[in-house]
Image (tube, rainbow, N blue to C red):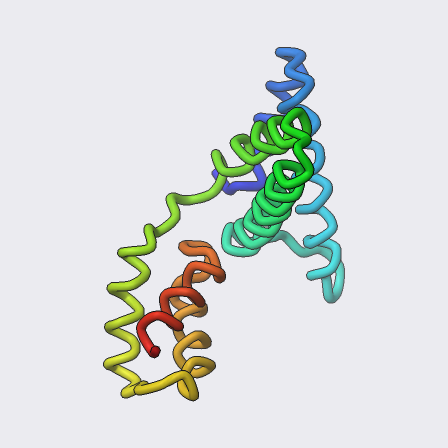
Length: 151
């Protein structure tokens, strides 16, 4: 079952179980997925691949993380807790993310493979790594690791 289909099935189940909070998040995700699907249409119908759906979910998760950070800075723990609950639902549809150590191992391998030596090679390394790690690691973590390794 595709990620989109799973979200749709869980949306129906949340309606039946009257889970208001989960339902709100799933409706939001459904909307974002449909927006992406419409933007991908060229002629007629188009459906999202799981990779494209993961991109949409990762963007939603990143937005929630940023909101949590802002709410905590503003001492609005009630809103931060709400965002954390939404983030939990979103993350349940994402594949397991690589840890920083795993990203570091892959980055070292690519840096060696590409013969990168300093920060001037960062763009080249990031381009290759982000293609390989798309949907598996957050860009901010990859960027941090590459900076550390090339410094």
